[in-house]
Image (cartoon, rainbow, N blue to C red; front, top):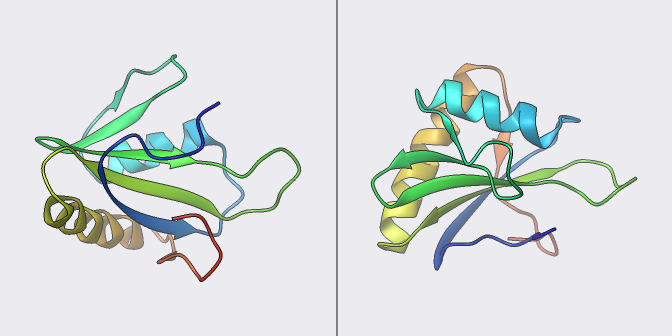
Length: 107
């Protein structure tokens, strides 16, 4: 399983929740008024804007949260950062506590 982001430009958000990857993707899609793309494959993601999408990286088996939400872009780091801020705000409205990675965390 891939455990790194697939886009060349990435902003990582972290959520300390015990949640499955599929459930996290569903919440992200709902909060972003989008859909889960490539559902049922090994590489699902949520489109956030043209050339920008969110992927969820979960801890390895038996590791505790956090999970990482990688906001990826083919266009630019700025595009990823703008959509990461929007996604952070949207998830916060639904009660999620979103933060940036701490030193030593993947990101």
